Length: 200
Ligand code: GTP
Ligand code: MG
Image (cartoon, rainbow, N blue to C red):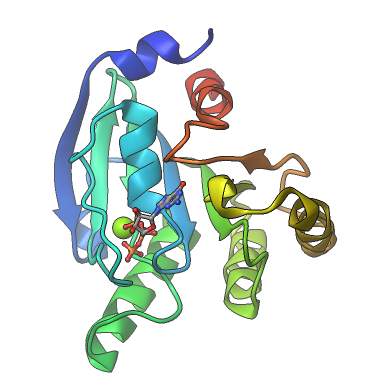
């Protein structure tokens, strides 16, 4: 299985970044996890790496408040981003993260792919489309990762997928293939590991 070895190997928290001048050197292959608050970004990093407490996850939207860099093997970064949309934090603080998040997504030379996480129960919302438009403008290829698949009834799956596909068709930087995941049950994790491991 491609990616299994990489993810079973060395993964370390490097740093939490609060301003663009704090970013580490852009000298590794980098992927980031973006999405609305509480969509499951930090949980997905933990599930992919099999390290439960690596990225801090919680049921409170706005848990991740910095851009957190994790080293994966010796040539890759996994980047956990603060969420966008509603967060349980003061407005001024949230605005500061949002500015940083957008500056990062638009201006990071080594960013190979952004994973845009979408809750599989809800499909894409207007805030997701705003981020997708930013990624289009910045020519950052992005791929949708549907999260919390374990919470979706099978009859709701196809309409949700159709809605997300329709959104993606409007965005030139989007990969048409989506990855359906569950950090709880493990669905899609091997696929996502393989995607990350094969980026050059
Ligand atoms: P912020 O950092 O606040 O933006 O949130 P986040 O996107 O990092 O979400 P986080 O990983 O903290 O998860 C939010 C909540 O969703 C937690 O209570 C998780 O346990 C739950 N969760 C995450 N992934 C899954 C999943 O695949 N299935 C289920 N059932 N719950 C999940
Ligand atoms: Mg988080």
